[in-house]
Image (cartoon, rainbow, N blue to C red; front, side):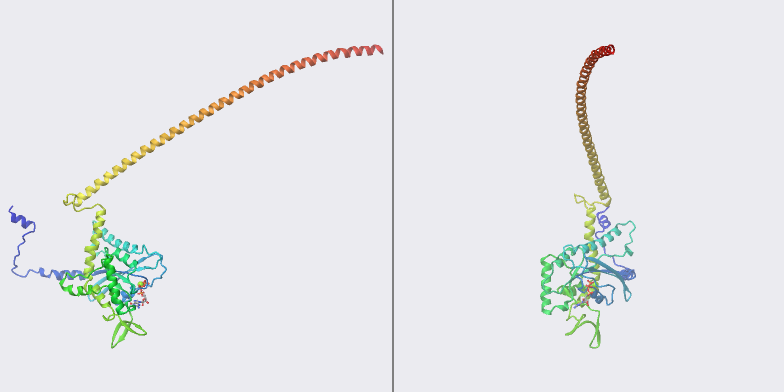
Length: 429
Ligand code: GTP
Ligand code: MG
């Protein structure tokens, strides 16, 4: 085979050939759009923030609707996550929106583990997707993807600096999800304080190595706007579903005794910037980053944990079959080792038990011998005692016989004298 053919077969050296007429594959982008529109989209937002920081209000404001949800109490024993999914429709585009909100975040005295339920929730969504991917019959096209695409981290408008809880939580989340920090209820900070607060937050995030989501600047179409917006992070937002008439327009605003703050007024807050960046410009990038960066990392770690590798120790490609075989052999080896260990342990235990039994038997024998000797001694003592008693009885008997003899002799002598006295009495009368 000629070298050029081999190169062509390998896909190298592709030649550009002109088309003589219209073929029709220029409709591919339209086909893709149509397919996506008919399938619908899904977007999942995670709102992390202390109780009452305005998470629900901001979601209602962002999507211009009233989602369900009750305010949480400050008495939760731990952090929980509440997830709600809604079907939204705008023009002919359907969006399955999932809003996950923390409940009880920042309310415990010991906040050491507050980040854990959030991390576990994010991982659980990755795991569900991975399990679906690993199935033989995958249904990914109509699978409800619950992976979190954007995490809005609500920072309290203290004007000071980030709390340790914020830093720890964002650090734990940054490799798992696109973290977008926002200053909540920013109407509580003055303009000059806000500028300083933003700088302070940014420098604290950098010095603690927290990687927040950066709006992408590699696509020419959005590079400029995204670049500008990156400089405005973290966005200072205000939420409100209340509509007020300003001039001759109804606008979302919050009214105070001293004035009105308009949510969609860029001079008042960054709400419009957030909506623009999150929904109108970068929603697809957030979805893409979730899949190609965060999920990929989770998947890689999980598969490596399970023993899958792409290359062998000599950097040669390792097929799935080889990995399976290697893993199976490793498993069988381990099983054999375990079996051998158990057998050894069993033999050892039997030996120990045998030794114990022998020892017990020996002790029993010794005890038996001791008792036997004791019994013999006792028997001998009793025999001696019996003998001495027999001797005593014999001696007593002898003494008794002698005494009886003496007594009978004595009585005989006494009897003949009485007879003689009786005769003398008779003769006298
Ligand atoms: P939980 O779900 O209970 O944790 O609360 P949440 O974070 O969802 O807060 P929610 O949206 O229920 O708002 C709590 C209170 O803060 C309500 O009284 C809101 O009106 C008010 N609030 C919401 N957003 C803002 C804001 O931007 N500025 C001010 N000043 N108040 C706000
Ligand atoms: Mg809420």
